[in-house]
Structures are given as C-alpha cells and as structure tokens.
Length: 627
Image (cartoon, rainbow, N blue to C red):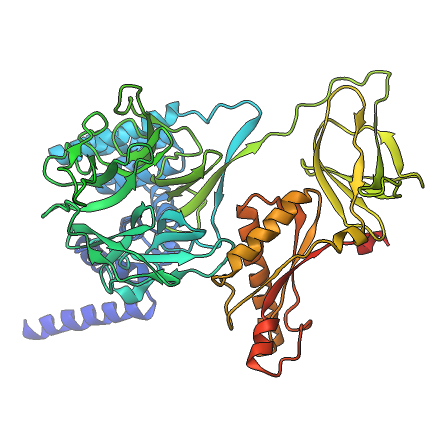
C-alpha cells in the first residue's frame, strides 16, 4: 500500500509539473485562487481561451471583472457562454455578465441574466441588488437622447489626461486642471479593490503631462472641491475620510491641515464639497450618522466666528441609495444617485432652485451625460461645456474624464434653387486712407466643406455666386497689409454683402505688442506675464480682425529636438491664456522656433533669459501657398 501511495504522489506531481510547463493551471488551482479572491494572480496568467474549460473561463472572466478590466472580462464571458447555457452558471457570474451587457446597452440580455440569477439567490441583500439591476435595465430601455433643435451634445474623451487606470473628479481652478487618479503603484494598493491608492494630480490646459501633488503618501487622497481659493482635500483610509484644507503658496499649495472648524464626522466619510454661489451654503456628501442610505447630501453654513452650523440632511433629495458629488451652477444643483431611477450605477441628476427656497424634484440628465455605466463628478464653468467622469464603453481606462460640449448642427439643406442667382460681394479698402486695396478673399465654411476663393479687381471690389447659407470665416490677404479674419453669416435669401477694412503695415507700426519671458526649462507663466498678456487681449479687442503669430523661443541649452518641443509648449501656454479670455482660435497662429531665432547671443545668463520668450507678431501679406 505504501508503494502504491508513493506512485499516486509521483503521478500527481508529474501532472502538476506538466500543467506549469505548458503555462496552464489545473481547474482545481484556478478555482482555489478565485474563491479566495486572488484575482491578481489569475490575471497575470494571461490565459489562452482555447485551452480553458467553460468553468475556468468563468473564473478568469470574473477575476478581470473584479480588477476593472471590463473588455477582457466580457470577451472571456462571451467565450464561456458560447460553450454552455446561461442557466448552467451560478448567480455571481450571471450578475457580472449581466452588468457587462448592460454597459454595452444590451438591456434584453442583461435582464435575462439578472432574472436567472434572481431565481438562484435567497439572501435579502442579493435579492435587493438584482432587483436594482433589473430596474437599471428597464431605465436603459426607456432612455432617450437629449432633445434639441439646432444643436447636439457630443462627449469627448480627454485622451491627453486619461490612462488605462481610473481618472475622475476633475476641477478647474485658475486655468489648471485638478483630478484624482489611481495610476501610481508606488502609493501602495487598496486591499478592497486591489488598485493603487487615490492620488491628486494637476495639469495645464493643452498639456499632455500630469503631475502629482502628493500631499499624503500611501493613503487615499483626492480633490473634494474648491471654496474660492481654498483647496479642499480629502484623505481617507480604513473606510473613513475627512476634509483637509490647503492654501495657495507660490506656484502650488501649502501642506493640507485637518479642517478643525468643519464638522467632519467621527466615524463617517466626507467625499465631495461645493459652495452655493448665491447663498454661500456649503453642500457636501457624507455617510455620517443620520443618512438615509449609503451617502447623502448635507448642507451647512459658515458662522461669523469661522465655524460651521450643524449639518442638515438635504432630505428632499436623499434616498435609501447613494447621493454624492454635489456641484452648484447658477440655480442648478447637480449630484449623482445610484437608485432604481438610474440606468446603470451612478447617474447624474439635477435639481432646480425653488423661488421660496430649497431644491425642486431631482431629474436625471439625458444621454450623453449619462450612460449604462457609472457617470459622476460634474464640473462646469459654462452651460455649453460640461466635464464629468465615466467608465462608459469606448474609454481609455477603468474610469475616464470627459468633456461634453454643445455643438451647433449644420444648417438644414437649402430650398430648391430659384431662377434668380444671388451674389456674395464687397469691397476691400485701407482702414485709414479709405483707398481701395486689391485682395484675395477666402470664404471658409465652418461646416468643413470646400472654401471659396475670390480675387478682387484693382479697385478692391469682388463678386461671385453666393455660397450656401451658413456660418463662415472670411479671410482676406494683400501685400503690405495684415491678414484679415472675420466670422460672417451667409443668409438663406437675398444677396450677401461684406466690405473688408484692411490694416496696413504702416498702421501696424503704431501697435506695440509685448513679449513674455520664461524661467529655465519651464513653460508655465511667470508672475509678470498675465498683465502683458492682458495688454495683448486689449489690442486684439481693439483690432477685432487682426491675426497674430504666437511665437515660442528658447535659449541654446539642451538638444534642438527638446528645445523645439519646449518652444511649442511655451507658445501653447500663451495661446491658452488668450483663448480663455475670449480670443477666437482662428486669430492665433501658434509656432515654435526652438533655439533658431535668438533675440541676443546666448552668452550670458541674462541674455539666455531674454531668449526664453514668446513674441506676438501681426501676420502680414499673403500665405506662402498663394504666392
């Protein structure tokens, strides 16, 4: 008997070694790792689906699901259920497969999965969760896109910021973008979801480089909001989070201090905060004692002594589910909610301020603001462009930052042509002498179709068949004159007439455009730069058709390739400032010259400082392609 047992042991060891040699775990090993929650180990296997049984496929698919790898999880679930019936799977797998189908907007298959899972479960928590998911699927079936006339809402992924890891909770303060990310493994991993701890990052508009602030190491830290110029940071660990405050210091922020005056809860967690700009009320989310559900919205007021009133539950908006991420814009309070009226996890809702005080009944935002996935953290400075966070399909990572903008739709097709032919005509002249100026005119449709190019007579007059009605950019070019741009509208009926006042090179000599300088190897604005840029804004407002070149330069330290990129970043920084103050993008030609055009020799530190600059030059004459 002893020799027989030894033989069985040898066979078992040989089989295990064979499995490892071929890179394939046994089903027993897979299930053991899966049921003890070791999803990371299974994910590192990178299994070949062709060599896996349906049972193993389910374990690997669920592991990827728990780690937020939705696409890989869905592919393996699809493979598993191509070899087995839905009814043969246990309810956890059915629930996850249903959620993945819900996020892919297959509401019917999601409902089938949830109903099959519902028939297997007995515990109240599981019954409640599956009933909620069925409600999501029903809401998805009934969901409609935003109805509009003449425009549409379009969602753009902020690809320069997002990574394969989660990014969310974006705020903009004084031109900088602040957000939370979980991209840095050096911060350590949260044992609950096996992702890196939350970290607070910032970046400049247009930059592809995001930088960590790093107040707290190896703990969750994130942006909760801004109260004017005060940065509210939350720090959490072990399911408890509090608000901390940081103040501007130089180009950054002071080390956050625990917000003693704010009524942080002793055992709960405070996540997000905002200020009502009309009343000064502070609205925040918390799961403190007295909540109706997981997290609720609470309101408090700053008292004369700097402390705060006792927080009150916004009971008219809160439910037994979660309410989080408040943000007030004008008379609208945005927040997120994950109850049965959502169509898949957290959805964004809004409530309108009532004349007698308080907030009206909440309503869910339509598509594309919401999706069957999690949608949260609204931020906006203008009603036509709204930032939010979402893990919807088509993103770059497990949670991404999006910008949703209101885009004007192309005008409807023109009516059938009439026998009468309408014209587009005008005359170009010197703005000071009123003498005619021969010009080349380019009428560029903003809809993206082919431009119309005209050449005037010697007396500056031009005429041609009127193009289709719509919005256009009118450009005019002449030797010795500033390039001209003007947005115009071509009407549907009648002739279109547009005269063009041209600014001569002599007239431009009256204008003194400043330049700005930069610190070594930097492209952020120095303290003295904004006043100089504001003077550029005033000049461009005084000459509303003028086009300028925003030219970036560097000193000679560093490689040519690096200096070229640095000069472009400096030019983009200046352009971003001008655009934020209302200067149209078509009036700004951004170009980096690297180290090729020094203002003075690069022979002293001061001379190199002078060469690290951005200059603003009126664009004169015709483009090279028209010469």
